[in-house]
Length: 319
Image (cartoon, one colour):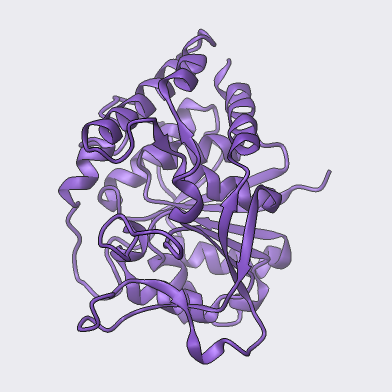
């Protein structure tokens, strides 16, 4: 079975932690590196979280590259209070992780994306689960990689449902709408896994209890991390049934697209701040008759995906 090379572009918070576990557990994937991003926390925190989670999972050989620390339109970044309410002050549910002995790489995350795209071309999958700032920067520096990267499957956006920051805007897109618009308009082989499908894939404490029953340190820590997220969803009235597998679903769809049903659509992000829908992901009217290079997931087989997710994560959390 040929493995696909994968880069995770993570703003490592709670659901990113689960996305990471799935990527290292699935034998169809060769995780060649992580690029850190701001978003759920600062770039310093998310970078260390990625290193520490890899250490917990016994994956210290996977390199971590530092991405850009703020949006393409700003000079700095401050964590939104709601992000800390959902992900905890440290991004991983206030669970203290053992520090990794490994440091982040000296090559920048943007340069790593460019290098990997040129080296692996169609065998490369990039899964951004935070703002699209890093990928937009890479495409700006080296436009040719838009045609070389095999697949970009991102977690972000909302096409058929309400946003979770404004009525029309999803959090990752909201962090850098200009970068997201650039990626949507330039990157080929692009799949958007947005709130349309991620809000349908829920994990409850029934599932996290299965991790506890594994009797392992990894299982207990991951259960603690996601239980914080579940409790935040309940406390904030986001969903009382459980918490969404936002970022892990993007990883799952990147590996096996048959989990979802898609709408082929050339998309854009609304950038007019006076329009009332700044940051909205929507079809590009000017490209409705053009060949389609992107698609949006609009339905998901949540039962099959959740079952597979639990099977894969149990395999990596058991020992």
